[in-house]
Image (cartoon, rainbow over the protein chains, first blue to last red):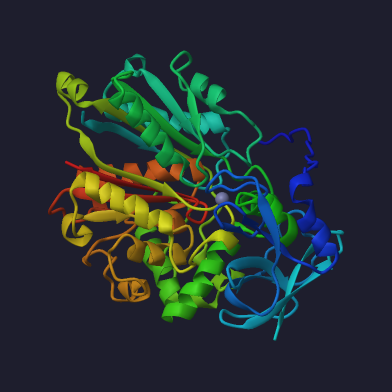
Length: 134
Length: 385
Ligand SMILES: [Zn+2]
């Protein structure tokens, strides 16, 4: 026998103030990482603070050009929050020089494929990176 | 100071109509009875559960009370799918510190109280939510699928080799009544199953299971005083890696496994694992995980994991039988319980109490390898008698 528990909904307010440039950048078609001005450590996704030397003096670096897919998956099961999708979706990680970026793709890509990155808003209003095959 | 395992317990894994404390109770009762001590002799309890799916949000105290340990701890630990190993280390440390003579590590997880989409989301949110799940809907099968894509591209590992891990582990689970899926599967059926997260198919993935396990540890002095036989913890290694998948160096293996195993081998004085070990419990939440583990633990060269399973080297009669009780793949993977269920299996093997699934023992040494997330946590233990 089972009884139904009381419902509890979490909808978090996530503070992105220190990395606002990244989120604003997506709306302008730009993808940013950060580089520590003190030790040179590079971060993608960006960090406002350096985990290596503990400096908070960071420079924003635009990630652009041609990248290479280093791993990928096509998701056939939809997690809660992604019910709006009707078809399997591809998630890939691509390497652009010193930075790696995670993104969705409009077409199926495989490891080794050359891609460029664009940004777009999904049906739920969330901006993200999309890779397009070169 | 040496610390030994004197009692082990493990429930059946599966979809179980029990509360988290009722489930823990079954494993604790078996472990305490197996140890041959009384409940009152236990100085401290460690409760390991990730419990991101269960209704009891802070379950350590209800579990502790129900198992009769109110007043003795509890210390609650969480290390995703490696929670059980972190619980064991905490209990071990409490004895080594001199604060306890006898300690119990309890690992338990209730995963089936929510729907599969909720469970997938909880797993996917466990990497780095803001930068991954929020934008891209990453899932736990998806993270391992990314590693599989890299391994297959780099080394030519085939879908059939992945499926061979599942076939082997199901064959072992068929003889383990405590397994979630105690039945054999064919290679054809596994290869033909639907995709969950390309390139991983349904039969490449562990089930969503409830379960509990418990391990009673004691100091060497206490073990002598009680006149008991123990299985000794001879090596411990731990490591971890980045939360963000985009910050990893490589996707064809888990650095946390490499680092943790080096530490454990050094502590146990092991130079060649295949020569020293009789049996191993590896973290096969997905088939690719077992293949990467063969390589990262030094059972074979990097890239040869597919061949290792194909040649039967990880099967009974091979170089080292792996996941003799069915592995996470077929026995089940209740997150908090998994690491201690591996200790249960290793202890049963080393005591020659594994029945039909007993391996031949030469060195009387076993290894357990427990990963949290995709190498977000890595633990290796060497046990011996
Ligand atoms: Zn720095």
